[in-house]
Image (cartoon, rainbow, N blue to C red):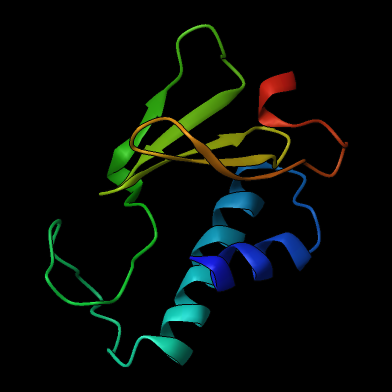
Length: 112
């Protein structure tokens, strides 16, 4: 996760939800391709014992009550919040913020 967060932080800020989601997917897949030792499964199971992480599934996009400009993507151990401005916030299942990145407009998920 540290390398994923490092690379995600160094990447240019996204300006839309779609750009941010693409950035998350590309960055995590690149890190896992290089470091996990497991090839990417194009149709990963929802729950896997392999030591490769996968980006959130697109069927796990949910509205966020009280934040109409933010969507939540659920994965096994994290909730990823993505703003329509490209902002990203990743929280552990317990709710601890592990990573955040503002959108290209400088606003964070919490400011939307």
